Length: 296
Image (tube, rainbow, N blue to C red; front, side, top):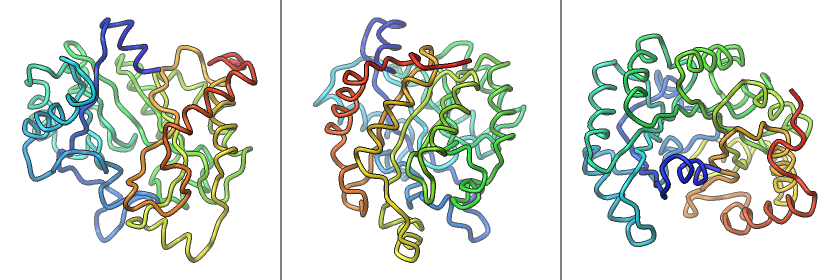
């Protein structure tokens, strides 16, 4: 788990600060609305206020988190939309504004594999030499038909090539995987897990599909009424997934965070603590450890 990674490397708790740096996304240009499941906030519901500077957002996040968790070191998480989708000069200015904060020790950058070119990799290499850094790629599924349906915008080969480039530059990569996408079954979920298990990633994030009222997925569901993944299915597949991925992968999360004010379905996904506890119980019942069923 990510907390274990921080404890092993730094000997202390390190928190993430969600930043909205005002980037856009190629899926939101020329009248497009982004990925099918993406909200108006670009999957950054808990990010900072884009009208404020990055430094101001960092200060606000630190103040907010201080009521619950004490920490003197933070990762600036560029979360909303596609955070490599800009000019190199603008990217460098925004990244280093965050890194210049005395309590920020590194960056987590959420983006798409088709929005990372050689110039961006050079910039990431520069940051990686002195700071903690990882890049998060929205993969979601290995099913190419589903990828088209959700308007992911790139094929699996693009993901594979980008991960290879980042690995060659010794830049840590995290993949996002969603269970419960329209018309997918457990067979699809297992295929996606096995695909990612052999891509030499640094980390992985598991999410259940949830429908927010401020997304195109909401309208799609009302018209098509596809099956929504239930809590027991999700707990089962995440438990299996943890057994199938390499033990070296850093697990960043086992369930997602919906905006409860906009959440439509499934209602169970709003109770994050219950989902996590149920997964832990399932792992114990089935004697599953991370990597216990991984096959190279």
